[in-house]
Image (cartoon, rainbow, N blue to C red; front, top):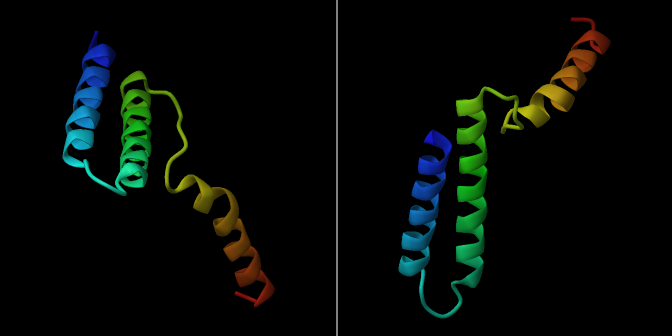
Length: 77
């Protein structure tokens, strides 16, 4: 029930946001707005169900942090 309420609120926010983003040349803005809301809903629902999810830091932890450690080790640190 909680997830249904959350999804309903995100749909309401998307509907209200699209209503405000009317006019010529706003289709791309509505698309980006929708993508951001879908990602936010995904993270929110994963938080409610306590399932692992891909976040902003996933790429950093998976690739850049080990590369940084290798560079530091290579430089003698």
